[in-house]
Length: 221
Image (tube, rainbow, N blue to C red; front, side, top):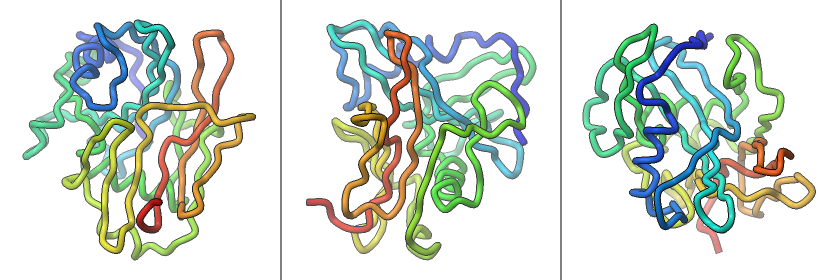
């Protein structure tokens, strides 16, 4: 299990993201983001080398607050071939310099996310070591072979999120712009063969729930 260190980060994650988010095609703001942490969860790296966090942040700089899903990985050295996915570097009070990456382009995060969808691993609390996050739910109705061709190197961004394609039309879709589901009951599209859903805080102090990740079985209509 990953150990959560309660220590200083310079710059902070929110400071890094305030500079990085406006460069993303799915960012809806027009100016400098005003970010607040709104939720998220962690996954464990079996090798204990890479920190994996699915961070939810809310931007209140615009007319309407918008929440974003930002999967991040934290590494003790640069990830070869992933310069385009670097969010920035931080000085960690315990671990020293950390390289933070857009996790959709990091093979360790993608592998563990697929394991979460399949039910082989469990989401972990964002702030407490060795504590499952019971608010994160998942489903999967396929077989393991359907996921073997999904790779981080093929991740592409558009105005709604990030997609990792695989042969025969299978695709893993990460919803970057989060939308609360009606009655907090996330609706799965008919072609979905798996999903991850979770909760986050909204500015009025209540909690919203919605889809974070959907595994699509074939071309979407």
